[in-house]
Image (spheres, rainbow, N blue to C red):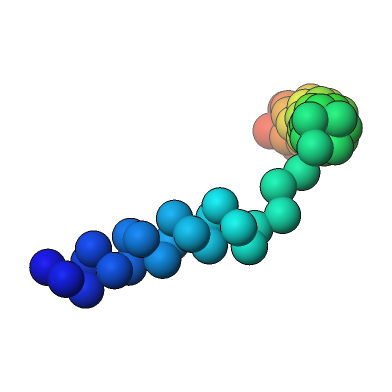
Length: 62
């Protein structure tokens, strides 16, 4: 039990004193990049799905 307690105390101290947390502005900028990238990749996958569906309909219609 002492090892767990020591681990938790050391983890807390490391998070409090040694970790460099991003600023709010940096965090918002990163979130915007993730959101835009997600929308772009989703659009690409959607177009690929439409194209493959059309191609398969033509192939199966033969």
